[in-house]
Length: 259
Ligand SMILES: [Zn+2]
Image (cartoon, rainbow, N blue to C red; front, side, top):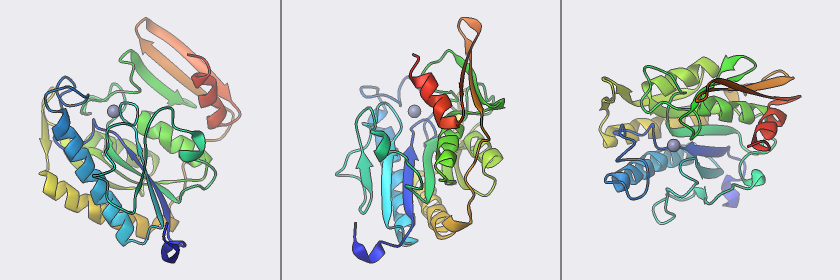
């Protein structure tokens, strides 16, 4: 990283695909080989690079992108804007994801709402379609809430999120000062109304610039221990699993250690 910027904020960009502009069809847009997958990759790259540009303009000294969809293999290095760095492959080494104060803020791109949100586009929690609800100390959380909680454990706040309108609302309920950009909203059973990509990119760039400039004003989302992580399944119906720990990290480790 260039020495002249060494004092600027360090930013982690966490991406997903379901919350990108124009994405609403899991059978055509989300996985390699599907008819519109390359279109989705292009939109992902555009939205991510807009955030990189905004963060860079605001003086970020380090921008690391963690591709959170489909095993961290959606983005291509020849398309990512410098000075960002890209983590690829699975599993992600823990020390390249998050550690104590490793970053000053998290920017989410392309996020979706938690399972069961009637207003969410492609709303789900984790890759299993059978997860009905996840809670942390009784509070319902989706994927973005889980990342926010782990970030909070390491004193890293979420500073910005882009996604569908429901994902933005979900984020604001946890971190009310996060800057959000709703690139689309649900307007029918599986239909969405999206901003044109060019307009979304412009709003994302502005939002990232603002969020990184004010990065010092954010508070991380801290969960008080002991922490109970609960999974409720729709199949088999009513099945519930609990994982407990003194910290949110211990609770998640308990879950990941018990498949
Ligand atoms: Zn995804």
